[in-house]
Length: 399
Image (cartoon, rainbow, N blue to C red; front, side, top):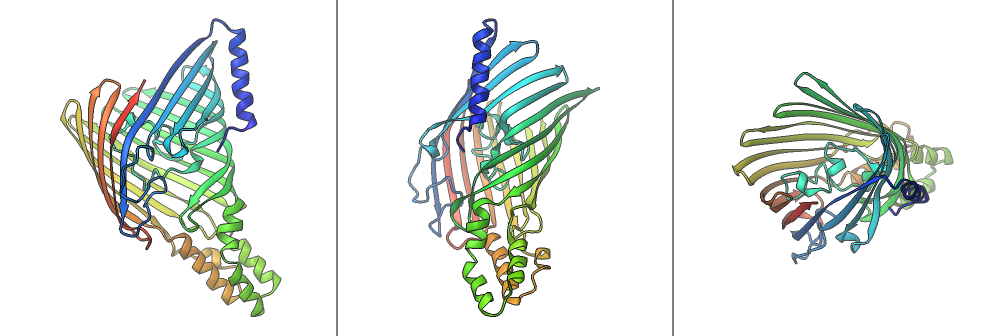
């Protein structure tokens, strides 16, 4: 999603402020991932939309560059912008983050603008490969949703209780853009309205536990018009020819669409880093209530071991399941053909499930750079994917 006028005004305002504040400090940092990736599947279609499936090596599928600038305007006020260029977008630069922050106190900071949407635990830094030990974060949870950024207001807080550290975030905002649907194999438009998000992280010594959720009102966009109503148009016409009334068609449409329904996203998990052993677990559950979108359950478990100070080997299992058994949304549909159509639609939208096991090796050859290798093998229930493998090797850096 390209920068909108609000973001441009925010950037312009920050630059204008800097021009009048010669004393302001500007700090630049950034990150990059340079990876060679090869993906293949028995069905001929990639398990993940960012990968090609001909088995050839690609240097763009998972490569990216990002530069971030932060201007300290004094008295607790700062402005931040992050520009990112991804290989999947021909390295076209895009303003991913653009926000102003004000430090209310050492414990509380309020921010306004465009920033990361904390959908899951590592969402804020999921593009910074150097911060994790995987060749890529498990796609069961970190599926690369397009709503990885949001425009709104957020309050970040931190507290210390003896040896315990508590970090929280509360956020309100909106988002509109596109998302890839496996059912249509296309990017479809939709939006989030009035998102309310809360996350909590508690740490002590070598362990961390975390949880978070957000709820939104869905704006259906072409997800409703193309993937849902458009895909079942002929079935609705058949029902009308069988005597379905306009009211019954309306009942059907109101039941299956996403627009106006509540989207619920939640996650929880833990991280352990004790001596040579590292354990990670995260569980996520999300979907659109009272609609044709079945709730998704996804999780991963990872076990890492430090072979040496600079080398970590990680084995992980990840799984994603879409619930097609919850048919409560069908209760208001009275015509049998429309009922069957809605049930078939749920099954179509819940078509994808996958299970995979991966092995990652990380070698820190520099204080700011790590070489990573990953082999991932899995099974996808979609007939055009089936068994799949992904090989990747490359370098993650921060600067």
